[in-house]
Length: 71
Image (cartoon, rainbow, N blue to C red; front, side, top):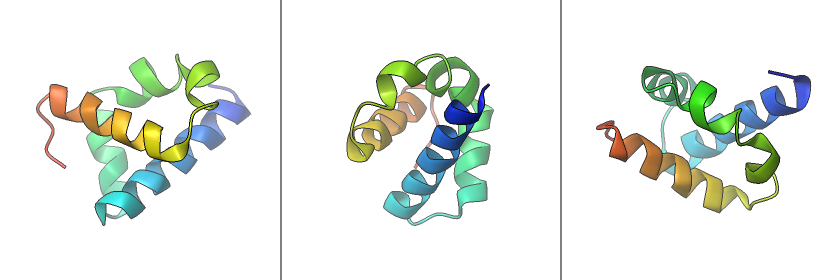
Protein backbone atom coordinates (compact mmCIF):
# COMPACT_ATOMS: atom_id res chain seq x y z
CA UNK A 1 0.00 0.00 0.00
CA UNK A 2 1.46 3.34 -0.98
CA UNK A 3 0.91 6.72 0.66
CA UNK A 4 -1.95 7.71 -1.66
CA UNK A 5 -3.93 4.50 -1.22
CA UNK A 6 -3.28 4.59 2.54
CA UNK A 7 -4.67 8.14 2.75
CA UNK A 8 -7.67 7.06 0.68
CA UNK A 9 -8.40 4.09 2.97
CA UNK A 10 -8.21 6.30 6.07
CA UNK A 11 -10.51 8.84 4.41
CA UNK A 12 -13.05 6.15 3.47
CA UNK A 13 -12.99 4.65 6.97
CA UNK A 14 -13.84 8.06 8.41
CA UNK A 15 -16.48 8.73 5.75
CA UNK A 16 -18.13 5.38 6.55
CA UNK A 17 -17.93 6.10 10.27
CA UNK A 18 -19.65 9.45 9.78
CA UNK A 19 -22.36 8.01 7.53
CA UNK A 20 -23.04 5.00 9.77
CA UNK A 21 -22.66 6.85 13.12
CA UNK A 22 -19.86 4.54 14.27
CA UNK A 23 -16.40 4.96 15.66
CA UNK A 24 -13.73 4.74 12.94
CA UNK A 25 -12.07 1.91 14.88
CA UNK A 26 -15.26 -0.16 14.63
CA UNK A 27 -15.52 0.50 10.89
CA UNK A 28 -11.88 -0.55 10.51
CA UNK A 29 -12.56 -3.81 12.36
CA UNK A 30 -15.56 -4.56 10.13
CA UNK A 31 -13.53 -3.88 6.98
CA UNK A 32 -10.62 -5.91 8.29
CA UNK A 33 -12.84 -8.88 9.19
CA UNK A 34 -13.73 -9.46 5.52
CA UNK A 35 -10.46 -8.18 4.02
CA UNK A 36 -12.22 -5.24 2.39
CA UNK A 37 -9.12 -3.08 2.57
CA UNK A 38 -6.73 -5.65 1.10
CA UNK A 39 -9.11 -7.17 -1.46
CA UNK A 40 -11.24 -4.21 -2.52
CA UNK A 41 -10.14 -0.71 -1.53
CA UNK A 42 -6.41 -0.96 -2.20
CA UNK A 43 -6.52 -3.08 -5.39
CA UNK A 44 -9.22 -0.84 -6.89
CA UNK A 45 -7.82 2.45 -5.60
CA UNK A 46 -7.13 3.82 -9.10
CA UNK A 47 -10.81 3.61 -9.99
CA UNK A 48 -12.40 4.22 -6.59
CA UNK A 49 -10.54 7.42 -5.78
CA UNK A 50 -12.09 9.04 -8.84
CA UNK A 51 -15.62 8.32 -7.58
CA UNK A 52 -17.62 10.41 -5.15
CA UNK A 53 -17.38 9.67 -1.46
CA UNK A 54 -21.05 8.74 -1.19
CA UNK A 55 -20.66 6.21 -4.02
CA UNK A 56 -17.65 4.53 -2.39
CA UNK A 57 -19.29 4.45 1.04
CA UNK A 58 -22.39 2.80 -0.46
CA UNK A 59 -20.20 0.35 -2.36
CA UNK A 60 -18.30 -0.56 0.81
CA UNK A 61 -21.63 -1.12 2.59
CA UNK A 62 -22.73 -3.49 -0.18
CA UNK A 63 -19.38 -5.29 0.01
CA UNK A 64 -19.80 -5.82 3.77
CA UNK A 65 -23.43 -6.87 3.56
CA UNK A 66 -22.65 -9.39 0.80
CA UNK A 67 -20.21 -10.98 3.24
CA UNK A 68 -22.63 -11.06 6.15
CA UNK A 69 -21.34 -8.04 8.06
CA UNK A 70 -24.12 -5.90 9.53
CA UNK A 71 -23.90 -2.13 9.46
